[in-house]
Amino acid sequence: MKKNTGNMSFAELALSKRKINTRFFDAVNAMIDWGRIERVIDQFDTRGKRLDGNPCYAGLVLFKMSLLGIWYGLSDRELEDHVNDSISFTRFCGLSLEDPIPDHSIVSRFRTMLSTQEVWHTLLDEVNRQLQEKGLLVRTGTIVDASITESPLKPKGKAQYEVVADNETVESDNGSQDGAKLQKMVKPGVDIEAAWTKKAGKLYYGYKKHHATDMNGIVLAVETTAANTHDGQVLELLIERAEPAPKTSLYADKGYCSEANSKYLRSKQLYNGIMKKGSRNHELSTYHKKKNRLISSVRWVVERTFGGQKRWFGTGKARYRGLERTNGQHILEAICYNLRRAPRLLTELNLTC
Image 1 (cartoon, rainbow, N blue to C red):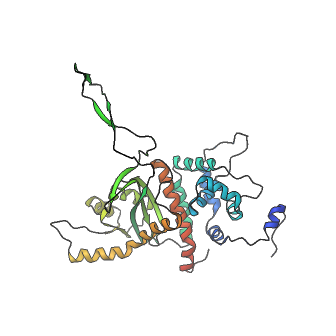
Image 2: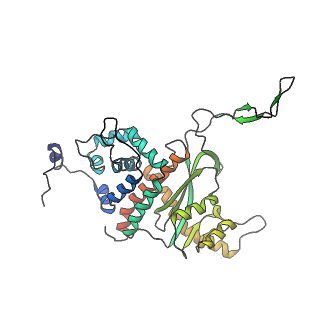
Image 3: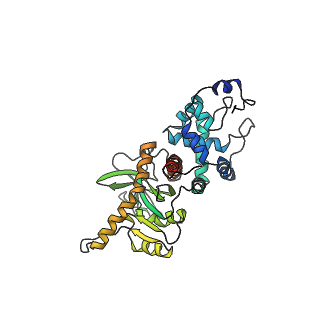
């Protein structure tokens, strides 16, 4: 079958004869209806026209560029250069060789807009909806866990404090300030929304990335908190976003074990698959030890998800400052992971698009 060359430029006609490896992009394009993704973006797109009066770049183009940035571990400036240089990147974004490439700052502002409008969760839901239509989601159970994302913008040296006078401060005869308060000084270049935490005897400064996955490790829901937030406090938020079906199981490690979480699972008609933890005076029974081992044999799936993200995309480092933008990064990483994992699942499950 001959290619339609009626609308091709001379450059594109010449390039059509080259062999360009686009297998991964072709697999993603076969699974995803980008028109549905574009409609989600357009609902929340608050951008106006460019300074020259022309319309802004299509939101779908900028979204696809954001995917490429995570898939290939590129900064915004590197992403702009690669889309300019790579024919496969240009075509995946839906651009022709004559189209101008969006500036790196435009991509950055677009991502910030999606974070401010809280569109990332909706985009993840839409991607998963399409994967479920392909039969790739296994909703017989849900697995939750958390991973640390370190921030490079951490405080250095000892904490410094300044005296802050309140309304009741009175200066005495000897010059002292009675009733004055001490306030920790914020040093420039520090992400003040991140926090310190300790894991396996090592200190980390940053955020926690909380995931809920299906039984194949596809990410269903994402939440981001400061690193010092206890895992168990986020369970309800993850369940509300993941929306597991009643009479299915929820699997989690001992960090989620609490009476409040057990009561919440009962209210949602979810089977409690949270590992039990013993105490100094109350050791676990043989039954609970055996049950914990069974839960561990299921929980490895979410660990593979975190490991896959780190191995494929180099995750684990915050790219941006602040909780809101880091949450957007985490959800974008989840979308990229799901799209990267999905073609392999199609092969493993002998499914077709």
